[in-house]
Image 1: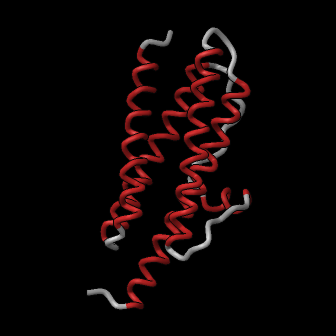
Image 2: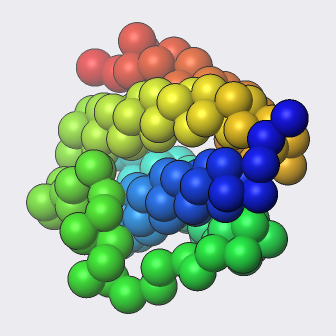
Image 3: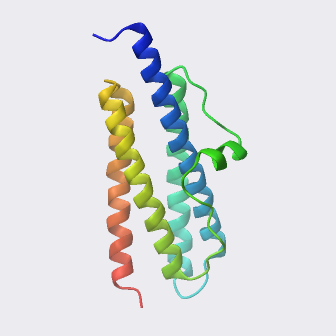
Length: 157
């Protein structure tokens, strides 16, 4: 059985890890916005729409992570300066080519998958079922996105 002090420390560690994931998702979101705005070429219509779908999904994830942080009595970061400090994902340069854009989303998604799995281990170790449940959904949707992006890249000339 864990003590109050141990629970507080575990919550603090989970809140920090969730804030890191929140920061990464905010960078991912903004990267998608840039891809959506700047994509050009034959695949403009399909990718423009797909990137919009992805950034809308990312916005929902950001909200879910922030709300989970609040449920753990933490404070979600909300300033872009803090996101840039905490995030491991980097801002993308302007990308207009389909292959480069999809590859960037695939790389960002692969990073997010790993970060989510790492955080899942922490949540499970802390017996935080709520955070683990949130992460299970993120992992599943990210794995599907990675599979679909990989399939897309196999057929792009």
